[in-house]
Length: 251
Ligand SMILES: NC(=O)c1ccc[n+]([C@@H]2O[C@H](COP(=O)([O-])OP(=O)(O)OC[C@H]3O[C@@H](n4cnc5c(N)ncnc54)[C@H](OP(=O)(O)O)[C@@H]3O)[C@@H](O)[C@H]2O)c1
Image (cartoon, helix red, strand yellow):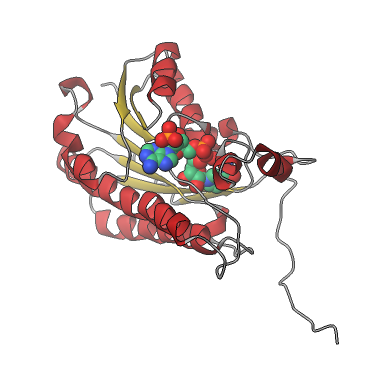
């Protein structure tokens, strides 16, 4: 039986790399994002059947209708890869844009919860399913300017654990992935398209690649059915924790 995987945020970065690796593994794919041309180009390149879904994942009404509106061949989603997400801005909380905070909460938390709720009943009924949630090390370790982004990813981590608690007794698995510094379009988005600021994030470092993160996702998916990988945290070797910050008055 062929496996059907729905990947959100398949037009770029981790999502695109996950799509390539799952296609190589023979999965049938549903590719979801807003940028249609990219999804269609990817679908043409992949050696598997693909269904392209051009939509904004924040459209909760459309998400609720999704399981019933998929073509029959793609309707039984076995693997939901909740990867779409973003960071916006790096300003301290008292200067951050509320609009950016809303976008992060709507995308990273609310949309992820709605799409999970839409597909879980089918997984439980078919006794077959795996939800992979893309969180971040930002959900575990605070950093200046991480404010709402980090909090949204802590939400994803705890939602993943609570899903496990609810799904106990069913064969449906849940995995949370927490990548560290990784070079994708993530920083370009964070800095509202400022390529100079985005490039500076990676200068002089060897960050994780999208392929590194995709390999962790695929490994978790390929474990035998009785094994649930709860959480994977991965960083580049050149990234670690700093000391706690202490402010000292100069005078
Ligand atoms: N790169 C890192 O350092 C890093 C580290 C830890 C965790 N993460 C997390 O990993 C995930 C993937 O990020 P990435 O690094 O691969 O960044 P990316 O290259 O910017 O890709 C983000 C993807 O999310 C999609 N997306 C964003 N908002 C969407 C919306 N409203 N509706 C539908 N799709 C939407 C984008 O597609 P469209 O723009 O075409 O819609 C794109 O495909 C995110 O959840 C991010 O928070 C990234």
